[in-house]
Image (cartoon, rainbow, N blue to C red; front, side):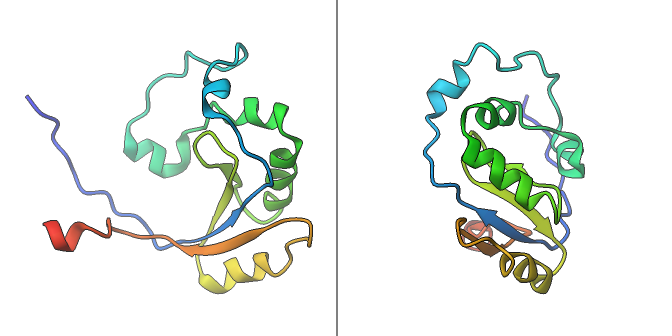
Length: 128
């Protein structure tokens, strides 16, 4: 039997994405002895509601101060999180203007950009 899928409504969002000047080797982060390995599984609806966490983030932050600095800076403006195994950091904002307002304050030592969130996959129309 297959999974029963249900649509998920995603509110519109604009993201500020920071790109720390480091490369994080995914394999070494997953192999880290300090990585939490017993987090209970989480369904997408609860994750989308902000109830999840990235177990890789504490490991990366402890090893890469540039990532820690980016999280700390962006957290002044919203819930800053690391993408996957890093190193990029993002925070969501309700409007494009809010996202650009944050990006305009970015220190010269950091790099980042604004991206619009999508409420459906870009291939949905062509393949539906």
